[in-house]
Image (cartoon, rainbow, N blue to C red):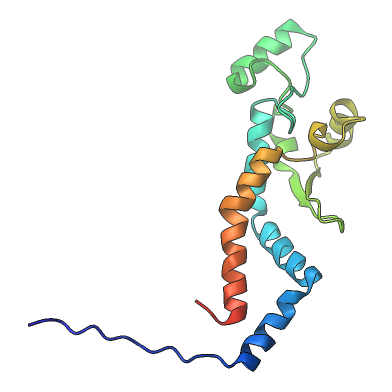
Length: 167
């Protein structure tokens, strides 16, 4: 005996219903707000990506944050964090890195702020004049693009489908 497969018929939406659900999606600020909301929900993941950059002692462009002038301190830091290879990693106690938070300026560009008491001094020393992919307050472009593709895009598409009444 063959098992019969039960197929549920989906009720088709009328063109008017589809138009009503589609209307909010035709507004760019609405779409940007949806993406912004998704990125903010993933702050912990982004902070992990940023911490990995610091652990390697890298700026977002892949260049080194800096070099230690003291060979004794360099050797100590190399023992504490071999991934940075004795280069500046901005991690000693971990307080600076743990104080990181996602900044979301109106321009739609996301970055990182730091609430640790050492932040002003560290940013003055290692970030002065650094913009774009040189700024330690930004994220590596390749990591950001991967994050958007692997995390944000699928969730964004799910939200759009929900808005349209699809599963």
